[in-house]
Length: 156
Image 1 (cartoon, rainbow, N blue to C red):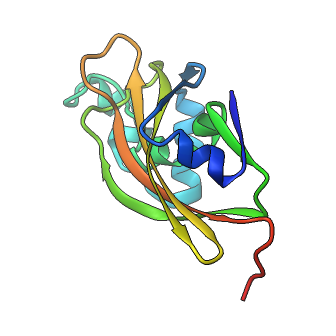
Image 2 (image 1 turned 180 degrees about the vertical axis):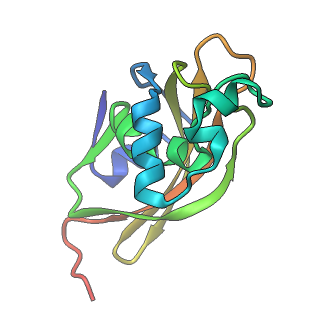
């Protein structure tokens, strides 16, 4: 894992692909837990018997479940020390090019896209791609925005 020591080190790495997370198997238990937490119980996610004759031949992970794994998987790739706080500000774009079948293994790649300085720190845009082992297309491509509050900043 790459650990940046402050905003200046992050700024110097803009444009860099930082590497990949470890592989994570997507299980039916994880999908069922996500369905219970969100109330999204669509049969393509939670009914293996019906899904077996559906368009994917098996149950698949929710797209938003895949998106929700970014903090954990991305956190294996890099971190930023020397800042007071890192806050998720949102997502500029998200696409789900391919479904994640149950039992598939996924991993995340990260690239630092841009960093815009602010009075209190910076806004960091990171491009993430979640790959499916052995698949031609990724499960997810997303561009996230994180606010980095510098060590001397006061919150208002």
